[in-house]
Length: 418
Image 1 (cartoon, rainbow, N blue to C red):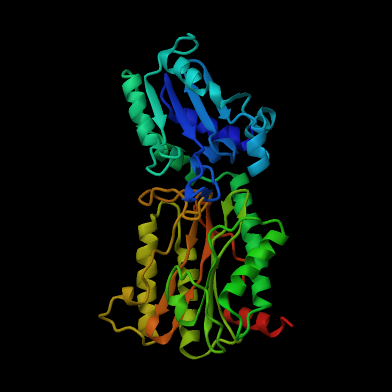
Image 2: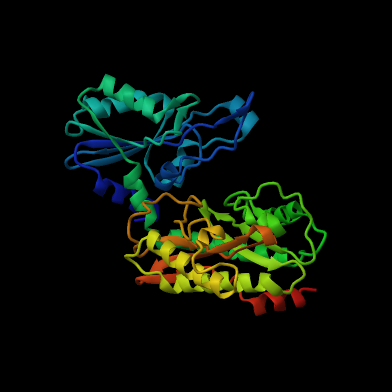
């Protein structure tokens, strides 16, 4: 059984008998006038189908002794292809999804009605419909799955609806070997992109030039999609977590913070590194960097299955508090939130901040980030060091261990880059 088929079987195992489940890819979101944002399939839909095309629909039907999956896609449109490119054929969708029952969207409503009313006598009486009730999931431009739920309840009063989002979230939190491989590929590509950045960092370079360098390098080497808009922040700008403008030039004695990553077949890398613009760590900046690095390594060593992300955060906060007191930037009675004001970890996968239950203890197969940071606004110093961690054999395995972060290694790289 392929990875995608195994995911669907795991979902079927969670569904009750005599039930159906619907997943919508979604529709492009209007940006302005007749322009839309680049389309991205709903991640739950993509996770179960491998299909990245708008208006597509998945229907799962589980009877007492039979299970069926149906995929619905747009019909061929010569005009649409002239404007927006080639559409999937039925055969292509079948091969991508490994779903044999592929139909055109004009048959969706009638087939859904057959499944729910049992007119074809193929299943037991369907009494439950699972729907992804995410508030922003649009089936049509101004029609959400929540509104579709109301239609179902009025047309089929014997049907009970259940939000399937938490069920698929639970599946997505445990990564298969294939998914881990994609994250690793994204991380390795990101590592190479960081190497390219190091080769061009120097005083006078504008932050946005470095963001463009990273994106172009990725495209040139097969990584066509960023995990998220690159954060490139030098000096005081690095104290803003999601610094957006990137208009400043690098200065000789500043640090520069990168929060960046490529995607590989939809799976994200999420890496933060902080470097000295002139290639040498000095003074307070060096002490702050070492404090964050110490915390980064300590959390990676500390993490275990059965822990929660809240426990990791508490450990990181206490560790950073001691480091700040040690280097003299925080008093014993002061709260570290003055310099550290975000969580140390989130899940990673098809989404950079992947869907998850933050209260659920970690399990083997989870991929999380470890990203402590310290941000001294008054000193113009911002440091964050972020790695991607697989929970394996009950412990944390650093998937991004090959990306340089020790002071001596960074300084050596800068010294030998030309």
